[in-house]
Amino acid sequence: MTTTAHSGEGLDHRRKRLLFRCWHRGTREMDLILGRFADAHIATLADDEIAVLERLLELPDPELFAAVSGAIAPPSFAESLFVRIKAFNVAGPGL
Image 1 (cartoon, rainbow, N blue to C red):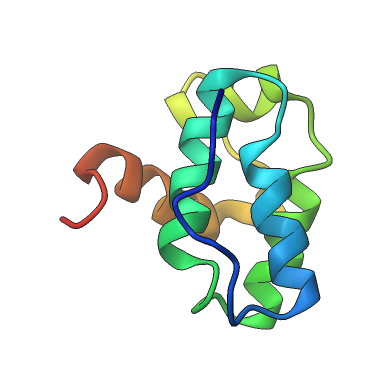
Image 2: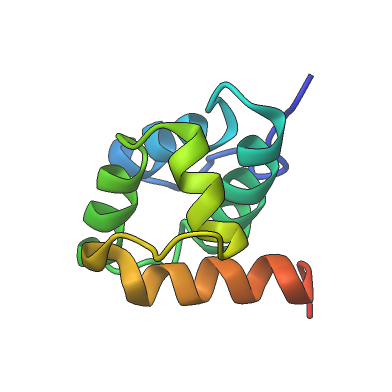
């Protein structure tokens, strides 16, 4: 079972809900990719980045995974956030 390392304490309702959604995508791979990113960055994302992440979560997992892995281009509305997500997952948390 995938769990979040971030308790959500101190986050507003919108960010808590988004953190939960990032960890409960439906596929383990996307849970780990988005959940770990959200754990590390949810508190510091700007409101416009939060809106982009919310839109990303509306996409199906296979499409998101293909974009993160570089098999397809990321959605145009999310290019800058994808750069951060990919960099985080390549470098690993804490790096």
